[in-house]
Length: 137
Image 1 (tube, rainbow, N blue to C red):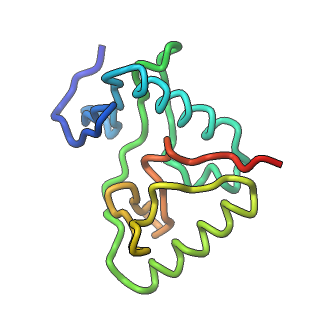
Image 2: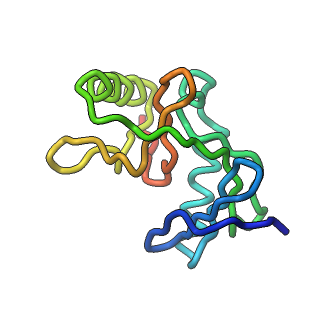
């Protein structure tokens, strides 16, 4: 179906492959992986545009959520105070809109750089947001 270049990451429940045309494919390993894929799809498509521009863009997904095709972001999140401040402001922005971003900071409050990337203009993008939650009202 897709020409895979290489495996670029994995977690407990999903494997991430690089696709030739500048995209990544997140493939579930288990039922929990499919649940993570479904959650990412639902968060992406139910978020307002102002929030969605900070989430990794989803191009396609399997109807049973066994895989998701997303845009690949190459620029890594820098280790600077400037970007740490930007990230904290963005987390507050998400919380104000009812989305609780989990798995973004370590227990010590440092950014989890494996889940963050930058767009071309330096905007922060969450590439793994399966652990985000909607705040109950």
